Length: 110
Length: 111
Image (cartoon, rainbow over all chains, first blue to last red; front, top):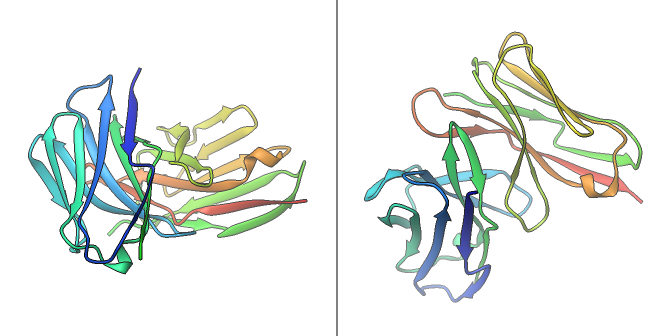
């Protein structure tokens, strides 16, 4: 069966510090991968998606970047965090159009 | 572009009541997905619909794919406390690998 992991689960970072969130998928190969952000009480905002190693599509221009160094690894990064980067970050993989989510990372930027 | 309008935005119900929510679009969708998100967790796929007119159940949940392919409904019968959370509808975008998401329906059960 397939599983998706995200870490860390929670993170508190100062403004201006770097960020690296990691997502890994097990039990499937060459999945489409996605990073979403969710503000408190709000819907899902797609940030990046990837259809293969090294292939990244950005949906919203902002302070973040994504990379896919391995088939089942997806990384979300920032060089300098902003207050507005706070939120709940979700990684997902897709099969036949259905998306399956990880447990999320709660990021608080102070 | 394609958009999904989900309503209601929130619902306050008594335990035991039936719940109904819906998603509509001006565009045709070939698939409708319904997810539930518990607080502090990632969304979980509840029901997937692939055919116009399809009615699918998952326990106390029933979802329907509208005959026009522009809407979908999710019903929950005899709600219980663990039904609280945010319910999202979603459908695949025609041009790429993305899903279009509704804004969510927040279900709250009155004590």
